[in-house]
Image (tube, rainbow, N blue to C red; front, side, top):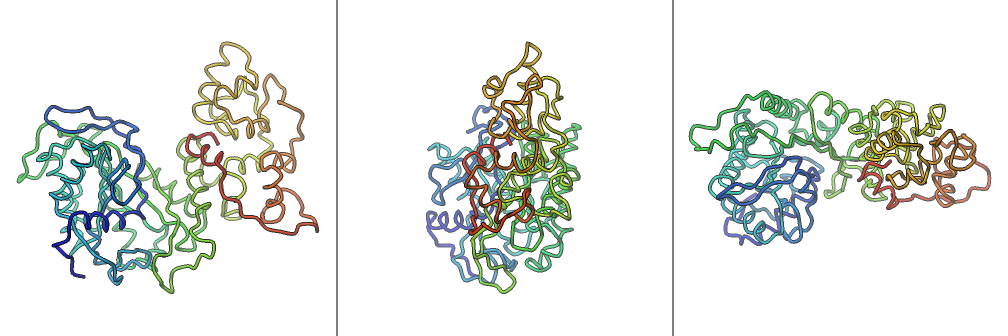
Length: 457
């Protein structure tokens, strides 16, 4: 489709910021870099968190596409070749000016830049490279940059872009090769994993002190030597576009963390933006609760020492909609509880629902000074509503309780969710009766959201 070069910059921004909203793979920067004389900006380790409105206001990242023109026809993508949508394209200087002006106005702290594939992967990636080079060395931008690597790109281009970006990501898109063949036939698992492997190897080389060389046609200050992707790499999977279950998705994520050294795997609930016979029809809308459970499980993989096979199995392939994955696991392993606060090791404490990474560390440190009570645990950040079912202090529980699934599930769910549990759960911990007469589909509570965010699960 023809790209209008005469479009106003504001119009381009509206089109290309809106076109980028379905890519969720942006997060905390993960890198810290001080300001430099003659340059603008710096990065804080946890300073980049979200991107919001399409017009660039009140956001932490300027999140845009270089172009939404694309040679591919992925069935789930709003920017697919066959869609009749407004098309636009920036120039490298336009992106540089937007980034600098938004930064000076304190609208953003960094740039998240992706792109449709225009002409071919190498041509598109070279445009992104030119943009980053100008932003760093002509405009003097020292802030955070996250950029998407395009599968099928020449490895030399991946290497050169990696020297200018803080984080890179290659979207896996769908968890299985079969899903890609069905919905994105122009993409293959091998082409996606190849740049992922290259980025991993480049990061490992940087950590060993091996510095890639920049292109000979570009003059680069010595201060940028050895800065290959210092914040690591991430990826994204679409949830619900293809029939894979939660066990398959979380197993793929586990393999990516283990084999490719990824910092984060992001999950994006499928939104049906195209009418296509191969796309699923979701009467309840995007599977947001399922996405939420995958994020909670992902946190358990990365910080709590769980494996995918502990959380789910082929016999139980999907997460419980009523309980977060950690509570669900604990209910299925009551033989391991209750845990004694004064003697349990750090790894065991991490597996107690309601105990997070920080609170487990505080418990281990505080108990050296004396006996802990439940009131002390609450002050340390333990979510007692969950933890009281699984902990003892000095050999005693907070109040007498039967250690069976029925009693504990009632404590965790509450009356309203208990009713939904009895009726709708396919793997209920208690026998249903003839008096059930309705169905509920509760969304995550604020406590669920807070627990997932801060690791108190």
